[in-house]
Length: 147
Image 1: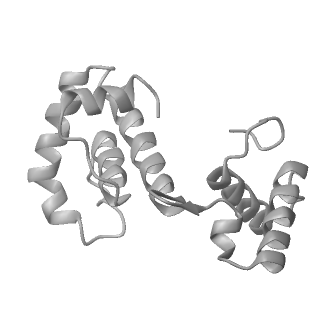
Image 2 (image 1 turned 90 degrees about the horizontal axis):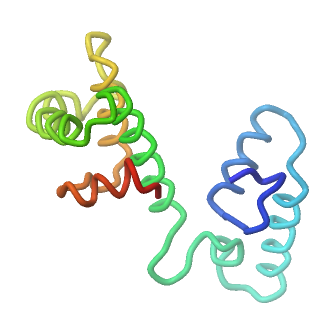
């Protein structure tokens, strides 16, 4: 979501926008600033937790979980494109990767230089910490059906 134009508040995207703007030394979009101010004021006025007041945590949902899934999905979609948009080829690549390279590489910060582009994307998907889909239906939902 684009924080400059999106009508709905997406706390994870807003938090990432805030962090990116801070690192780059650029202004924060007005909707993001308004979200942050409202959340901080709610926290100071009513108490509770700051992440709760910012909408980053509620029953059954947390920003870290959402972020990990989004990262996984982004990398799975990229790998899907790299295998020519073939769901069966992606499923085979996932199985081979999980039982081979991932077992050897999972303690690494990044895949070795010899990794193929598909392996690089699969490494990032696995390293996201989000569960990897185990069924064709789940995989299809992620790579074809969006989030």
